[in-house]
Length: 201
Ligand SMILES: N[C@@H](CCC(=O)N[C@@H](CS)C(=O)NCC(=O)O)C(=O)O
Image (tube, rainbow, N blue to C red; front, side, top):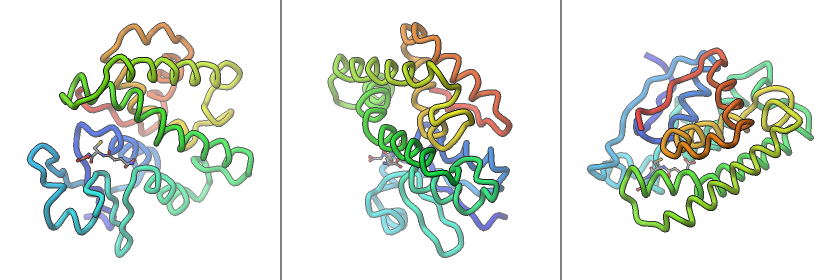
């Protein structure tokens, strides 16, 4: 049994980001699935753990961390002594923060929303979500024109944060394969040691 526990939902891309980093760091963590379909996340005891009623939530001893980006940051700072995933130099950190903001912003209004509408039957404007997805893919493609990874020469939290929903939406929308640099980046990410396979849908 591990000291670290992740409350997650198997189809959740936000949860997948955390599972991926934990696996790439070689961390042994316990997982507990929270049934979003039945509304378990809106009831006790989960809602006391995260009053925002969302997964993922990480519990490490007495420390409770909510939000996938905060969890990624915590794991990288606490369990990555080599500073591989959140390097110590300021320009790279600034770049990673920019991508974490995009992950919480444009990634959610684009691919996350589009998948929600198509797979989970959530309400929303599919055309608008597709337009936002195309804009994000253009941005990713431009970023990857002169460097292999989003924040520079090596993979970082920026890649972890953007990978899951980008890969999931390519599975759903084959026309996105028209962004070859993004497709190459996804393929390279999948070769990293400890890569954790995607949820089924
Ligand atoms: N900003 C949060 C978003 C988390 C999120 O939206 N989680 C979804 C599952 S992917 C959830 O728990 N949804 C339940 C709900 O909104 O009722 C993060 O990055 O962790």
